[in-house]
Image (cartoon, rainbow, N blue to C red):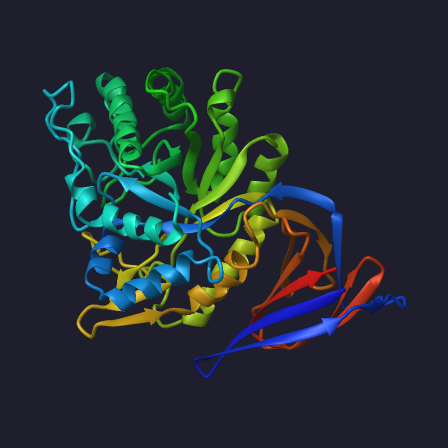
Length: 446
């Protein structure tokens, strides 16, 4: 067996990437400092990586020249690069929009004659079109609403939470289905949706509160029946779409004998911490449900824009922990923002793998891009997570077998110490040096 290792480090703020090649030899009884790989222990199948194509991303993209646009899209969506295959799009405005908007705002228009995707057509669709042209096929899209139109809500506005009025539940279900039908009529492959983005968060931007009971009843009594009417039952439905610390309770409260067949899985975010055990609990109780991370980003209100290595390491640590506890798809947040981490119509700026300095006309690659690539490039769609064991909790580790039978082992070292380890597989082993503050992807071919 042969081992190829790609090692990425940032020394004095400069990227240092190199490749090592090793051969496996017969296991001589190696015991200490070992990472074992067990391909016969098989878990979830992984579907792919992607990011959000927000109005903010589309707006910044529109400011770039042709060469920069090609660099951005080829970096993300080329099979030989990051190999993104998924996209998430907000329905109506979110915080990463240029301002509030709704496809329609006339409460008297019960037939939705005034329904319009004019805002999506201006910045979001041109970005999606360029992505699909580059890929040569439709990209798989997940859609998520941040808020119903203001007239449908108890507080009469898009912001500050509020709830969906009882008398508008059927209307809102028709509205969501109309969005999906209109997307599909334009050639956009809407594969999945979440019912509500962050249904427990009262935000200063677009938001709406659902209790578990309300989310279940809306799905069961309004949304799913409307999807049947519109021949949309092939669209995968994901509940929750919020942080991990309450994902288990939410799943237990919503999934029952009435809703089980309606729900494909549970979507989650990362903003409240690791909570990897919560994913495992969901996986144990609901083994037929997919777990997808639908949003992650470095918020400048909580983390420093300049602590780029720490931020990249947080991403890798979270991705590994989520993978090891059942995650089957990963959607990063904005694929592109401006130099300030926006535009954001309420000032909730954050980092992205690519920033674009509009004044300087410069595309800026962030460290998170290199770290995400260690996963998205090497773990192919259709890969199956396999078993492993490690000798120390100082290293984060995950392992997959790709459809071509190659084995991918990813090792994250977030600390200032170097490590020496042996990789053991099929009664053979090889030695591997793990530098301080590095991420390593090992590809093993038999």
